[in-house]
Image (cartoon, rainbow, N blue to C red; front, side):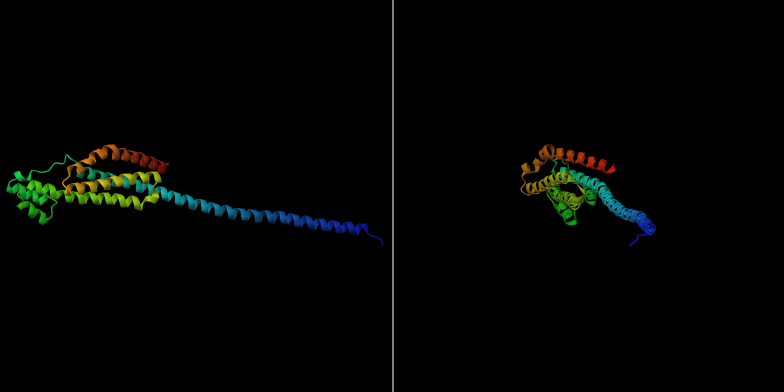
Length: 224
């Protein structure tokens, strides 16, 4: 059988042309498809990264809010505990007051009405007042320490472990001091009520100084 070479050449040319067109189309649309898929993946990653940075930013913002407040509550609690346990507390000399002075004192004191009446009829007004006012001071101090304690617990997740642990150690010491003052006062045991000044110097003051450094470091880190 005779083979027409020209027919074969024409057929091959058409076939190669079609293949070239197909290859060109594949290159064109395949490249666009890949670019489209890459763009989608890139946008997804950008969205995830932006969401992650948004969460991190919010955490830092919350930390910037939490740490100064925790520090404020610590200072408030520490101040009241120090005053409660101070051996240098001073009291007004009620026994020497004349009736007008005493009435003015009653008008400004924090004592409740029943305690005011008991004070007015006490044989030793100084002794009665000093004993009774302690329990008012104790209540105020306990509320301040509890406020500090509860705040640090509730906001623990916004603190570094090192900082929270430092807060907790001071928190425990303050609570123990309140308990010692309460028990010592009830038992009229001066040795228990005098321990706090030593504890403050040797334990609490260095811990609070360390907390101050840690708080400043975290706040400066949050600003960066």
